[in-house]
Image (cartoon, rainbow, N blue to C red; front, side, top):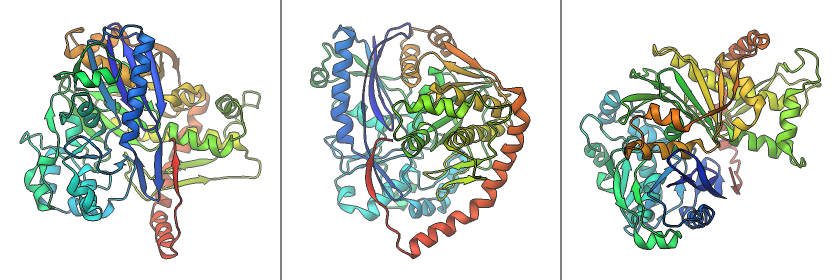
Length: 514
């Protein structure tokens, strides 16, 4: 069996698979986020405690505590975990959507050495960059910075816990720290220019590398009767590609968990001159995963549920019913509302940290069902943005796989299929990220000869949603309006931020499960 520890933005999960990709056991715990203005943080100590709980529960459910052969982890990327030499966190985790390091990102972006590195590796520096966050910690919390021995990604942190202190990272997580792929090392001179050291970064290893057995003391604490081998995987958005069966050119993966991650598999590299999307070379297949992640998906629906359906006993059923409005006359669901969904700012492909949510076109007759449909449409429009970029590559987009919590809502898949003009495949296995992590382990250990074989044998489609021809012309026009509105509103975001700063508007400090 293979144990996958999956740490997302809203939960930590332990999932056990057999070599056929069948899920044997699952356990999960929610994790909380602290939000304050542009800050989004989590507590790595909470991760640790809840990881112990879920692994013990999964082992109980599996019924055999000595049958684990391998363990791997998959976590959200671009979250900074500072730890001391004993792997204890020295501050809260700076999460992926945190926007505090704007000034630091600009400093790095304007550095000539970084610009040369970026031109060769396709990097861009912003407040979301790991190096910018390390520099922010140095400038704003020197005590925590001084106590920090390593700066890690969540994947690296959990692997360190499993191996009793080994600090390693995979090639794709290393890129988040601006690893120089041409020189095969971290850019030491760049870090030194800002008073930082690459000695504080984890050692880069290959995706799928077996780094040895789990520490005995850790296995005992997790309720595991043997010491399975620890295999280094990569972060969740990449694992999900393979966990939804995407392994051939033109196939697109849409994973809408707390955030939405969109990647197309291509056999061709694509260096985006506008830096809207990333091209991540995946060495095990020698393919390219092109795309990125934004702040939408399930987190957006959770916000809407809390605001609009707080009193509903079964909110998702009501959302589906009111958004579909099957009893309405033809065209009645075309509300004419456009929603810009950037509640936490816009990441890929527009990269506008100041962007915020906007409803446009509200009229007296609109109700919450109209608002929900506009929200679903906005996610479809954001995915269409990716598809339009993919068409520039020369690899023809053919189909999209849907997984994650949002994929459970049928109307969302139907709307996205119609907006993108591509068939949407709703996958049978809900735990697509964890299945993808297990596929990495199985391919690396020789269970399957290739990723295409592994996907063919372990991944299944439950339902296919086709574009609704009667709505395509409407959505083509509305997508054009969405793009025009996005461009028109863009300069007003900065003005809003200036007003807030000028009048000293305070932000609440609150805890939320995203």
